[in-house]
Image (cartoon, rainbow, N blue to C red; front, side, top):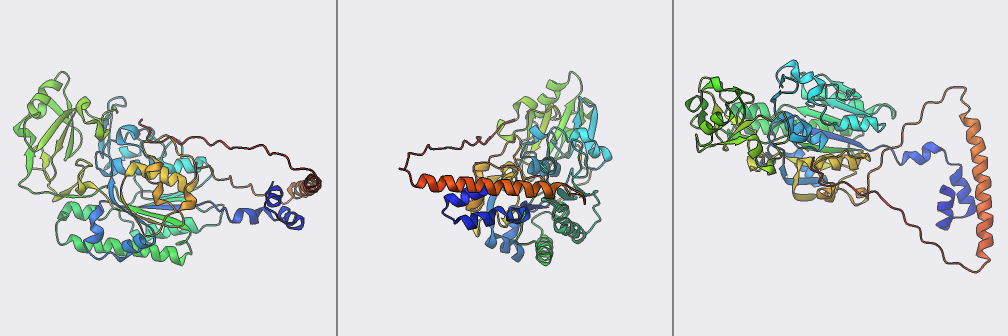
Amino acid sequence: MLGLVLLRGGCSALLCLWALFLPVDSLHAVNDPPQLLLVSFDGFRWDYVDRVPTPNFHSIMDEGVYVEKVENVYITKTFSNHYSLVTGLYSESHGIVGNEMYDPALNQSFSMETDSMYNSRWWEEAVPLWVTIQKAGGRSGAAMWPGSDVKIHGMYPSQYLPYNASLPFESRVEHIIEWFSAPKQEAVNFGVLYWEEPDESGHILGPQSPLMDGVIAGIDEKLGFLISELKKAGLYEKVNLIVTSDHGMAQLSPDKIIELDEYVSRDLYTWVDKSPVVGLIPNEGKLNEVYSLLADANPNMVAYKKEEIPERLHYQHNIRITPIILEAKEGWTIMQNRTGPFMLGNHGYDNALQSMQPVFVARGPAFRQNYVKPSMRSVDLYPLMCQILAISALPNNGSLSNVQDLLSPEMILPTATPPPPTPPTLSRYSYAPVVGSFLGVVMVLGFLVVYVVFVTLKQRPSLKHRRWEMSQPLLQEDLQL
């Protein structure tokens, strides 16, 4: 086929013969599997990049793309949004509806602070990207990403680190570099890297604290370290780099506390998740009573029955969403009473609020340069990453058409196709060389026949050629699960 293509382009017969004898590895060298690294700095709000000097973030913006506004998923909590980033699904679709959950079918509770999070059944309503790429023949590596140390659909990432909050960022980067730099058949195609800051400091200090300036500058320095290590390893111009977050952060005040004990007895319900979106499970037969007590209890809090949650939030259709949720207005905290711990910063509020929106910058061979996009949705990232990795996306709530303008022109293709499988290692006594030589002779003879026919046809009057068209499968865009 290669000989025919070259002949149609007007090459000489000698050049076509040379092309036929090219080693297979030489032909594949220009088609090395694409590589992508997704980095999340937990709680890095969209406007932090301009609050203090952040030269490393701005370097990526200058060399790549920057999205000014990213609408993440409701509720704007860590586990929900990190799973949305790697599945392209809303919380109601992927099943991780909060950092704490109760599943009435399993009769079990989930908390990010207990070993319950390692139960695979919580995660298997969706398929994360590291599983998808491995099923397509690729490899993945995960450094502390939420859910990446859980066996999901029978798989862990090809390389991963069990979660350990005390492991320094620099050590996590070293593992990522090692995985991407491995020999060709062992190198990862897709990597995810997570760091807990500036979320932890944002909770303690509040985003408006002047002390957050140093924290933000420190994150930029960590990004600079990652960039430096990628350059040292010769990966910076090869690996597509996306730096984002799960959510932003809102300032709280001890003067803005809603105490539920003032409105409803604790004997009537079970408390599931924490402020600012609190899940309540009323006792049997008490749903309407609990709701009526809370519906108009406080002007800074909204109570929803599950079926009344606004459709735009995509937070209704999952058994793990509680019969009643309470949503505090921005800056307010819902507590049972004032005796519990209080934070000066928090997230989880309505995802339409600017304070909840995360940063997004990216660069690499797949991306445009010095391009600013006004807005995107975090669920659109999944089909974008699948396009970059050349694998088929699973059904999702995102849309490639919404974000394909971030890609360089050569990356905007009709469809994404799976990467070719890694060829098996030949044994010492393999018959492959003999078979290869035989096929080579057959190809040369075939070429000569085609060439003779071609020369003969050129002596005859030209005929009208039949027009051939290739059909491409349609992309599934904006699928609502």
